[in-house]
Amino acid sequence: MALKAGIVGLPNVGKSTLFNAITQAGAESANYPFCTIDPNVGVVEVPDERLDKLTELVVPNRTVPTAFEFVDIAGLVRGASKGEGLGNKFLAHIREVDAIVHVVRCFEDENITHVDGKINPISDIQTINLELILADLESVEKRIERAKKNMKGGNKQYAQEVEVLERIKEALYNDQPARSVELTDDEKLIVRDLHLLTLKPVLYAANVSEDGVSDADNNPFVQQVKEFAAAEGAEVVPISAKVEAEIAELEGEDKKMFLEELGLNASGLDRLIQAAYRLLGLYTYFTAGVQEVRAWTIRKGTKAPQAAGVIHSDFERGFIRAEVVSYEDLVAAGSMNAARERGQLRLEGKDYVVQDGDIMHFRFNV
Image (cartoon, rainbow, N blue to C red; front, side):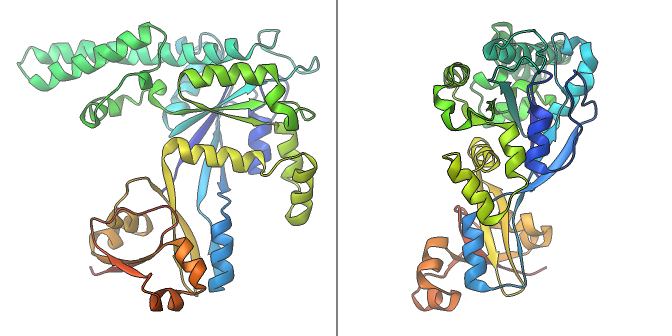
């Protein structure tokens, strides 16, 4: 299940620096606008202590974590929705991601140019939001016009489409994102192929200075971003792109000691991924055997056959049942055989909703 989060923001807020740090992908980073034109894609392993513990218990030939894609999208500027600064191309890249990580600069540094000449995180956020809203407004108005023409044939489907789109249009006119409009599952299907930018869930990454990473809660810029985000039910992750660059070069105990010195329990990358999982409603389940212990990503509410389909379509098509044990039960038992003897390994059918941390073995026949 390939999931993508697009890293967006104004030029020179630290997007590419952060991207380089968390993916070690070597994306170009420089102190001038439009350094990034084509999006850089980095695949990062999702850290999960449960996977490490399962590896200790099973001792497989290999361990495979699940992965998350971060896409570094070039800095947007005012007028992007009208093509300014290669804006149309950049906006098209955003349409392809599942969620948006909006990087906001929350530090002063006279050596790093700001596109507006001053540090104002709320103004930065509003600039990006306005461009996304204007782009969506253009898409919605075109679709309304087309749907109204089709209504003349008496098709009620188009009347419903117009009603939904008019509600979204009103929100956009009031500078509110499309995600602020409550939609039923059927209504979401109506607008799905529009790929509206402001329907995508947003996570704010407050980029602080290297010295301010351990004291981000007292950073007035970060507080402004948190207040803004709270109003729309979004989450804020304080992060230092410079610190993440240093962490990326460390491993094992050196990394742990460095984080402890900063007063952090986890790296910015770990916290960013955890927040993205919450944002997208993602779960992880595991398969565990002597050949391989592996983590798989699914959406919350996924049933067993569809979870099996993440591994291979044949698993879903020929699904018979699943053998399931929870992570907690397996660890407490100490082994799969012990869990079976305790009666904690159970058989589940097609209606079973997979839980976060389930260890599963699928029976299928095609």
